[in-house]
Length: 297
Image (tube, helix red, strand yellow):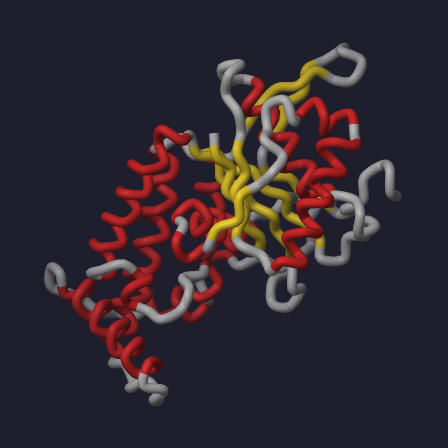
């Protein structure tokens, strides 16, 4: 089993929440899912985004507010016209950036076509993920949540690994979990590796969970890895569109249909209480307002 992890909102600028999101993909399903995503990318854009644009594909660029506003403007297209207008806009913009020129002004119809193609693409990606039984686990964190000391693994990571372990526990005893992160700079990578080692080697729950989760993660380039791109979409959508009744953060209503799809894809499991007197349901998406564990509060 593979867990692809990405985060959104940790710069504490535009987003109302910080999100650490993971998508769980069975290794035997991964390549078929990637092929399906690439196929829908061709259908929507007339090519792969990494070839049509000169910058990394990111959810915050694809799902910005103006994208929804433009998509609702009145326009009709002949079969294939939306894709061709979208491709023309992307290629012209890429060429202008490569020549360090000001982008030529796109037509209104091109902007509508591109915006609709983007929204179709994201909806289809989430449907593809669901069809391959991808499961979502995520920690949605209040931006003002108290932080632990640098040597401790944050609670949002602990919750992700806990739920990953619960999912693996319900599978074949030989199944092991690999962790794949978006590439960080070396200093951040070393810090995260040390924190993970401290958790998986230095705490009783961590040592127990390392029997199913391989504690040494892989770091990959997000623009080249469909699993990380999917995790980026999940993190951004949940940060703006997923809310519990107790949450006070602002919400973008246009993202709620996407968040509803992710809510349906979240991991669910049952765990006995500490004293064994009852069984409680575990959900994959969690809201956290304090990132400190009981050892570092």
